[in-house]
Image 1 (cartoon, rainbow, N blue to C red):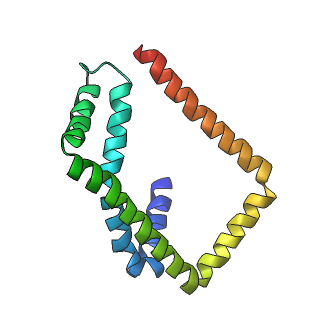
Image 2: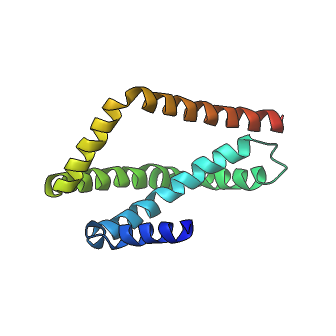
Length: 145
């Protein structure tokens, strides 16, 4: 039953009027542009959680080495220029959507109102999630030492 509800929800989001415009290919392009940076940051994390002679740390080190050996492509293009392009494209697109999409403005104000009315619960949830993430990182560190 849950799978059917999830499929209907995903289908509704994909088929919604706002997603039928240029936003869907633009979102895919932004994900494509930011993926090398995500790969690099994930590799930095993966190589630090265990000794380099073991997997996945060994493969992560090879990814980091690849980026380091190609500073013009790895650093300037993949880690600086593409994320800057994502930020610029995202800001321009969101500004355009903000001015042309009244439903976006209404729902944003509704979300802000909810957060303000439930600020204590939102802060507790955020602190709990942060503490859980910190505990997970510490546990990984303790297990690998």
